[in-house]
Image 1 (cartoon, one colour):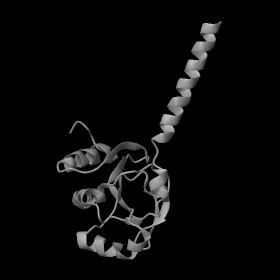
Image 2: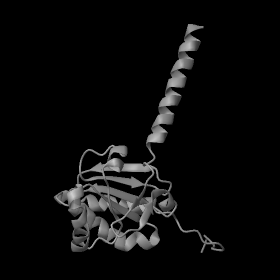
Image 3: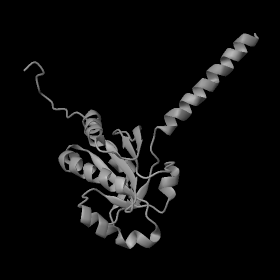
Length: 174
């Protein structure tokens, strides 16, 4: 009888741990304004394709290098559903200067200033910290830092997570 109870307790602990792990794979939902005044809602971006979210600051050289590489990929893959978001973590004193940095580097993806709330909810402690989400908003990869060569992994992730286009009436044997 004790063995049965022990097995049942272990099974229920494993089930609870699995449920918590599944919950942890979802990126925290948010609705925020980008620096152009557009409302960005993560839930409305789901279903389009892979989503890249980077927490960065203007003073962070690896952050800028990472976002420059993402910009190159964004220009190639955004029409196919790739979404990139840059969440800025500079202090409130620098928020007015943010558009100047975005223009200087030519970022065409949405840039959002965070008051620290999203950073906290996403458990970000280092910059850059980036998240790769599938079309359902589930975290498939989390990275800290950036080094040359990472852009190859970025391209692989984008193509791997891309939603295949379906077309009716095609014959696969052709």
